[in-house]
Length: 294
Length: 294
Image 1 (tube, chains in turn green, cyan):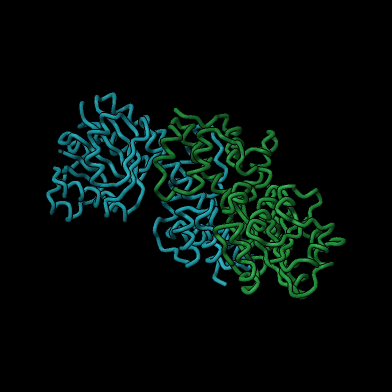
Image 2: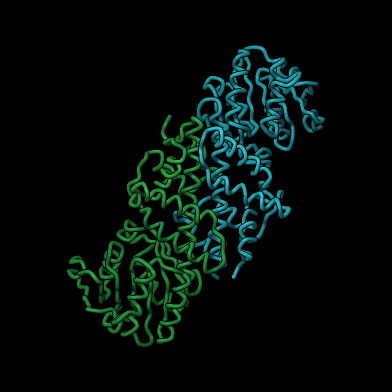
């Protein structure tokens, strides 16, 4: 298939690489020079998103945030300028569900389909082609693009219409952040009360308190391993999507709001690059106590 | 073994029944008449905790809250009055970790050992003998009582010294409440943004957002099944232990505090008897929106 790929950063480069490995023809564009590992595999650099779109059947965008998608699609010489009818735009960035619906409507008005298909799994998942991909858009477009998704990820779900993929990603990031906070409060309570947090975590695994976060991030907290993983500054961006969405939708998300403040407190300590399990440190600061083995 | 059992309510009655079934001699006491199902199995009612303690090697208490344990152990004609040296007091109630350490010291001063051994699993777990039992106290006392625990529960863990069992139970209840809140915010966001919460939940299972709470309580929220389960008023009591502990330990638990306020808001709607997943309804009220299938 002739595939366009715009945004070849730490996520996009390995994802595009998997599509090249599968034999697809890739037209690529980025504001930075495209990695040699992609051109060596035959990726064809294009000077603009418009030229990528003109050459491709499916155009994938993988950029940092909502304004970057807006620029890539609708900026000067962007995708929309070269798209025409009968194509599919697939935004795999993690951006606003609400603006996604507007982007989809504008692409539909040009006669092409739109899929929002954000991922979770990070750089590790991108390299291993094990990303979780949460998709919103029409079934037929999903079916066409599914073979491409399957080269980049493992759990690929069509959740609903346009925006629902991004909504699901935001929901995921809300739960992950708030569960990290829950585990942090519990382990800090246990530690400050004099118990061994490692034994407490062990006793809680298998019951109703069990979660992937207690397993993975609970262990990180106990081992004080705050090397990312997933960086706090990225989770701040994702909770910002949740909170802007809550504002737009007239929705109160009290713990999401509070969690963002705790991430901000980490950033104030120089922790924007910590793994998000480092949220524990904001609570530790307030308690004047570090979680540690007894 | 000669076992005393004080507190024969909806939890204590089936737990005592399992010990009778296993052939132990049970001396029992409650402020209410003891259930016929226990006396029919040979349980021996005693007029006071002191007489239970005098007759037994191991004395179990299973009462609602910290003041009830204080009264059962140290009130007039309580356990301490009949205990003497060389016995083991096992408190299986869910009470304050801090006061537990004081109770243990007072029992130790009489020459007997103390175990705090709160449970999770509720009435269902008590009847099925599948309780999770989190124990604090000396290893030797734990080893002596372990055969009794094994008749009442499945996951039995000695976490550490006295108080650590209660601390672990509080940590469990913090995580459970806050994870329910996390799932509620995420599903409410998804629903108000127009996605199908059932499909969102499905897409999130298996990733980092996955938990027993997303599985069980997430499903309850989607099906609007708020029949307990575990009642909000009981979780309010448990978060009260966490918050009183936080005050005593100089510890800030912002989401535990906020969660308690949301439970209070449920109670204000007549929801003290709802399952704790009904916390969703406090958020729904603020959002003027109910989570529902699309």
